[in-house]
Length: 123
Image (cartoon, rainbow, N blue to C red; front, side):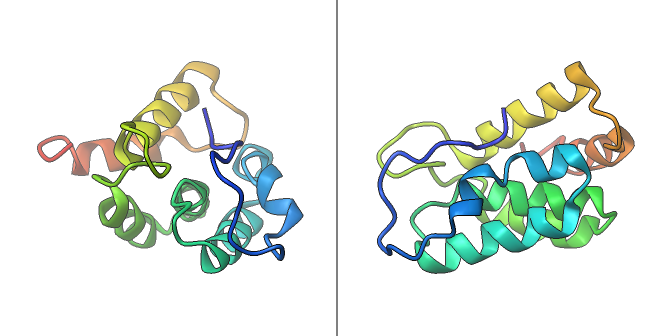
């Protein structure tokens, strides 16, 4: 499922309140916000890499595959949240399963398959 919770409070009281709800942006077709809001939150607290999953998905569904792949690759082996065993890669895989299962309107599943194909040997 797309990231909706934080395991620890952000370091800054300026964490954007909309970031907590940014998980719905890709599902609603708000791909620009799906990229911007997580990047803003990550800039305030870079230990919370889970927010970048939504940014990568936003790039992906905008058809900006190269930018999405940069994020997917950069964070893949890192724990999604500090102190937890689940990696960014694991979370992305879970999201992709959810996308395929639920078939949200407006999400181009062929783009998901392109990412899966690119990572078939390394993921």
